[in-house]
Length: 247
Ligand code: OAD
Image 1 (cartoon, rainbow, N blue to C red):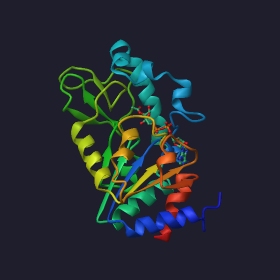
Image 2 (cartoon, helix red, strand yellow):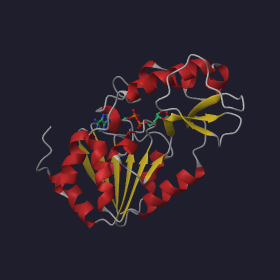
Image 3 (spheres, helix red, strand yellow):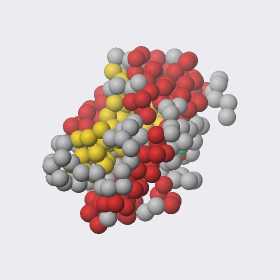
């Protein structure tokens, strides 16, 4: 797809030039070009696996070994992935605005690796584990050789992936920070998410529609498309670097 010269790109660049505060929401689509599977599209994880068996507290209570196997397999896919142009463009955009907050549903850590710092990882991080008995005890497991035995906290309790599973509450501080950034933004970029999962699905409704612009970047239409002011249809790894260069 040739995005250069498109009217929508020019409008998005114009909105960003006028913006002081920008919030960006990302989903699995931004990491697709890095080789990380999405959840709902072609080849998506939820097409092959049942979330109820793998990504709920009940699934972990029933069969922690199965859940850990699945997360270890996902870690191996993610370990082989590098940030793509979309991640890098968002990290560069952060440098250009007085206020820029990146809210991601992704747990792959690729935004951090690309250099984004004002980042809220709403669903956690796949490289972190936490104690099931004392949830404030967190363990960075990146670079650790996968073991067959279930990982345990020094206190003896099982560790679990530090991920927000279906049926669990998001961290309230992260949620408040995210909502505040969305309410205050002049431009909301919504990138590579099906916009189906709450609370992110509700964030666009927090935007101050009197003056803020919603820009969607996605290869396909989503439930948000109709509410977006500007729709940039195509891969984030091509569109975002293009927008960033034109700014
Ligand atoms: P989905 O898999 O639901 O949606 C991915 C979105 O990315 C779709 O709208 C695709 O059209 C779009 N997409 C794919 N490739 C793209 C590309 N190269 N450039 C731009 N867009 C692209 O993933 P999420 O919306 O992130 O939660 O899913 C939200 C949450 O549901 C996930 O965080 C996960 C999942 O269940 C948990 O595991 C708790």
